[in-house]
Image 1: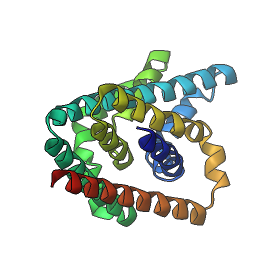
Image 2 (image 1 turned 90 degrees about the vertical axis):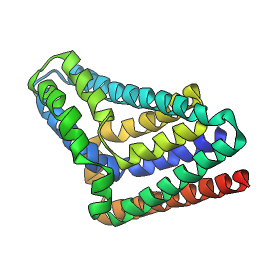
Image 3 (image 1 turned 60 degrees about the vertical axis):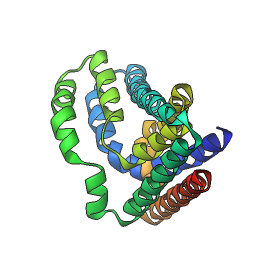
Length: 221
């Protein structure tokens, strides 16, 4: 478990500087525009609540993923296969993050968004209440996203409801500071620096995936 935690923190920080800013940045700008007329303290409270709600969505996904992974603990061989195939998925995802384009678009399938999330998001954006911001944050956490899939795969491999929830909670918490200070961070980082961090984090995911596939292969023998 400690290995996962030490892996999650730097990956969450690196990916939030690149993919998360691109993926969630539009939502942050949209709800900041809604908050522009509010008192600064109230606006920050709404924004913070939005992020907490997003993290809560991750925790729910992590708990479900860890619970699903626990079914593979029936035998060492079954758990080995889980690690092997999820490791392959992570390696593939890392390559997709590097290449961008159609592969990543397929993984972050827009059809899922259109079918399940578009209407509730549109409804939440149309409202100006505190609960609508909580709903926006929660739905943001459910958006199809390659980075979320990465940490969800880790949660599944933990084979524990509690550990899965903790993994996703750590991921979400360590993306919060950068998304809360979105405008400042966006101006601070130049394109070259963001590209280097993104490449490094994608390579990290590939290596982590290959490592887990190797572990699964060894355990299955």
